[in-house]
Image (cartoon, rainbow, N blue to C red; front, side):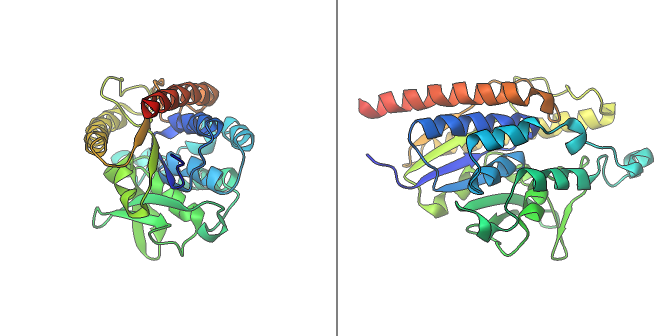
Length: 277
């Protein structure tokens, strides 16, 4: 069977999202080209890089040059402690997203892209781009998808506040159905319960505790979503690399890329064998 409507779904996961780069390289080597990308948080940023038309090599170079200071710089207001609106400044992350992704608007992309975020007032999942609100800045939408509360200030778009899409859909499989795929390639690098949640030692103890509780809820959400979609009529290739935890551990990017490639290639080979039976 020839698959003409391959939808690629990339999860959130902070620095671990570098694994998406390797996974997409494996997908390319198997001769499968995404006709649509759906991404959350940093997974949306990686998706936007490829949807812009960048090659694997070009994305790899850009991702490998990101430093922790590029994405995690203390806000001057952090000295206010619990009264601070956010621990980290939003502008360095926004600038880094702009440096990673060459396109500035959704209509400049070569492949359709859907980015998820959460409406801070209603708590509802919001789709930007294809199938959603597309008349917005691509960088604004991507920053909104990455704006995890406590760490980053919300994104302000058209008078509304938006925060990390992972609060509602770390692995946004539920956004797939409206695009009528015949194959789903999903890469999950989100939190898992087996991993330690307290690895960002540069963060205050209270923030690490908040981070741990958020990860537990996200991990449960991911597990429920995957179980539901395994029953779908649409074939699902699920890639879940085993990665060292670290939301801001961008120095591990190349290792994550390699593990993403190895895991994706293995899952693609397994899928191919099962299809031929």
